[in-house]
Image 1: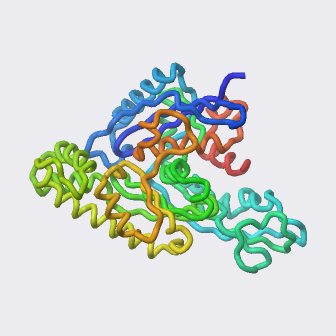
Image 2: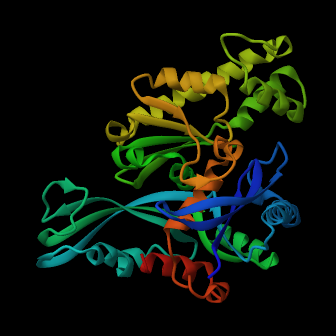
Image 3: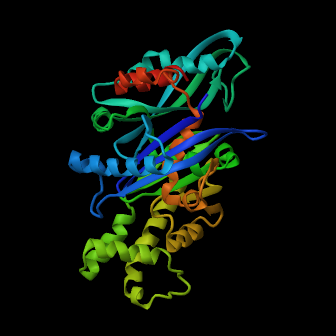
Length: 395
């Protein structure tokens, strides 16, 4: 039997990334993921939403990323997991299951996916991407993390559901159909990032993942291995570059290059004299962003259980200035720069926080099975709705 191949495409405002990994069985270590191919295509500096581009343009970026990864891996991909970073929202849904004095099983929790409350999430305009059981109550008593094995009359489960626009999903499906590639699953980019960078202890005991993207910053809260919530800050690396461009009356392209250079500057020793006149502009935005992040985390209803561990990741995470400001703002927490875990490959790639959401897709794919896994051709015939619904139903 051939080794399992997993392919992932991360579509973001800064670039399109394609990764190809091979699942290997290693004695005494079990299954591991080995990165065998990577391809990227950078989007224009002023692009804030990739699907605002003409379809031919985004298709060209996809072609470039896929071709590079396929040449690198020496194989042609036929199906992919795709991450998205736009058009998502959260809902919290309470669902009660009648247990009638029996022992609670995993199927009692999963019964949510057959219930009207779940089916109603599929509307003319929206579909659910992820559903996380984040708390349980047995017979209306206090919340607990694991009810399986307990006798009860009723089980109340609180679900965190992330949904997205059907139009957005259809655009992705059309794009892949043009590539003759079938879709396996669509995944939220900030969920993927947290899967890539959080350790088992952090995911279990509580952590905040700060994903600084090009057009925004996503603050994700993980506890008991579930994504219990997230907040969005409408500040990203684009704002840094745009500030420099506007104040100094230079092109956005030149300002972006300067931003990347300033990212690596140590605030204690500015060793590039030519960058000093831009640093104050950059620093002001970095301080503003770190202040907003701190306030959002502290005001979150999840703060008390997740704020002990702070992990920074994303396109803007390389900034030494941003790292310093956030670390100082969250001085009572364990703080570190995120790097990809649980995947084998070049440390140059794995330690790059900008690639975390892409690598998280591979982690997601390796730990989630879907209906149709044994016969990929079936997936090609299914709509977005049937793919995602079948996935939830078979959890």
